[in-house]
Image (cartoon, rainbow, N blue to C red; front, top):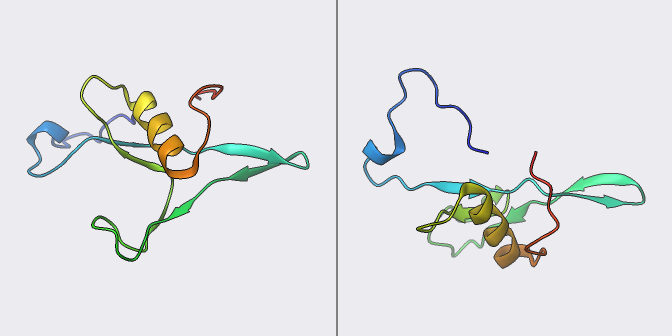
Length: 87
């Protein structure tokens, strides 16, 4: 699910204070029309206060990008942990 890095881009492992993260663009139907979930981070949030974003966050040890995105979306908006189709 991760994009191919731009030519000449530094690997994440070599960027100081950089962590791998994943987001989930979750589409769901309402009256047969697709809708997309965004979150608004708390103004008091330590990371990205007030930001409008896709649900997502840090990839934990032993987790794939997809697993992290699904877990974070579940934690942030209560979506089910299964039944998603990755594109």
